[in-house]
Amino acid sequence: MEFSWKYEKESSQLLRGFIRDCGISKQLLAKIKFQGGKIEVDGIERTVRYLIHQGEVLKITIPDELEHETMLADDTPIEIVFEDEHLLLVNKPAGVASIPAQYHPNGTMANRVKGYYKRQGYKNQVIHIVTRLDRDTTGLMLFAKHGFAHAQLDVLLRAKKVEKMYKALVSGDIETLKQTKDIIAPIGRDYSSLIKRTVSQEGKFAHTEYLVEKATEKLALVDIRLHTGRTHQIRVHFEYMNTPLLGDDLYGGKMDLGMNRQALHCAKLSFEHPFTKEKLNFSQPIPPDMKAIVIKYF
Image (cartoon, rainbow, N blue to C red; front, side, top):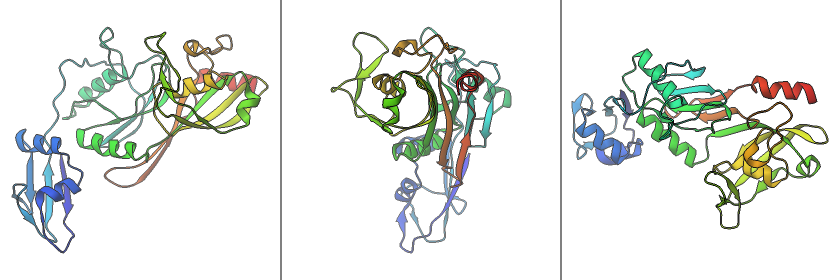
């Protein structure tokens, strides 16, 4: 895969520095140098010690990423929301983990995406997950189709320039929930469980912003924006507010209203495309199980 940049500065610069300015990491540069890539200026191969001048064009050829043999391919179809040569955005169903685990090496979204890549005959076969979702959370899940795209999206994530909005159904103390719009409480491990998290003074800072969209006395549909990305953050914070997610048996959610998984859905995703610089905005409606409850109770 090839990428090009025109050098616009009046003063010359070592190519090494310009390459770094273009977002090429040391690790990726090593891969380019030693695994079959190329560094060219105006069509001539150069080393990083070359002095690049105004008006010259740098072209980087990044070698293809061969598949990880340990990652199994799954032929289950995926629902594609958006795709180009750099990005893949899918609508994740409930009950599917994001990545394989020791005792569950297949059937995850990563396995399904690898199966899709193989069917399409893509040269880059490594799976790069940008936004991971819990097994029973549905909605928008973003993949990078090569390592350079993954690195650029990680920069956006760290700068909090990837906006995700979730929808959740919660029950409990709805009146108290209506009185604020932010949950700021540190999250750490619950040492009584291998997987559970809890609000703890020893935990890490966590901030969840929300808006009650629809509500009855004991039930609400909420729009949620995360300002931090702690494990199980939404589930932990709404349990802390005495309004756990419907169907979330791990965190005390009601199990008798038609939800047999946590009622959580990634509904919107917005970010600037790392290469085209276009502002991308995606949305995905809530799935049928959540929609049925909204229709019935609101």
